Amino acid sequence: ARFALGLTGGIGSGKTTIANILGELGAALIDTDVIAHQLTVPGGLAIPAILAQFGYELLTADGAMDRSAMRELVFSDPAQKHKLENILHPLIRQETEQAVSTARGSYLIFVVPLLVESGSWKSRVDRVLVVDCDEETQIQRVMSRNRLNREQVQAIMHNQASRQQRLAAADDVITNQGPLENIRAQVVQLHHQYLAYAEMKK
Ligand code: ATP
Image (spheres, rainbow, N blue to C red):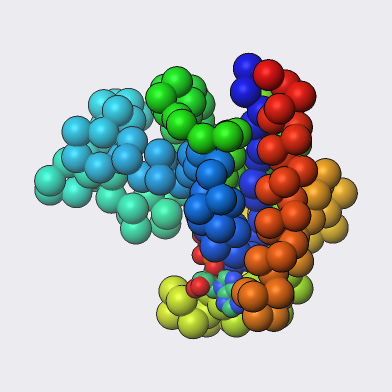
């Protein structure tokens, strides 16, 4: 199997930003957030199971998953959250492997926000890259991007692994703080390391 990197990091850490640089350098990007979204649009593969488990109340008029209704439901109810995850996770894995079969690139990158929280993702990847920044930077970025207040961002962060837990699971770390010109050099260096691993796995 091809060399596969798992790229993760907390909300607003810069996963997409770093993944895009690696993609420009020639890696094949597979973003599990994009896949999850595609599963829940009208006609998406997860819609029949969502309808069966949650009913029409959790769908919009055009047949997509009602994101805000679902967010509200699972936020306060772990059992409902599990139900949704039991629908989505196997489909995300299935669609990821589908994407792998057609991906062109020197190696694979799976962008997985909750990789550290998931044993099955950890065992699927050869190496874990954590995009790290301090928590205040995360809060500031997400507040300005998503128009949330500090408490709302902190509530999301409390539902994710802590910075320490992520760093403990990392094989490599990119410190995504400060000007991107500086960060790019770290990314290019790691890319060359990954190309070497990819070569060894051939
Ligand atoms: P999420 O988990 O919320 O999807 P993410 O980890 O993918 O986020 P990005 O979307 O890459 O993070 O970055 C979050 C925001 O911070 C974006 O608006 C991005 O442009 C900005 N950003 C990322 N890295 C930097 C940086 N080094 N300097 C300034 N802004 C940055």
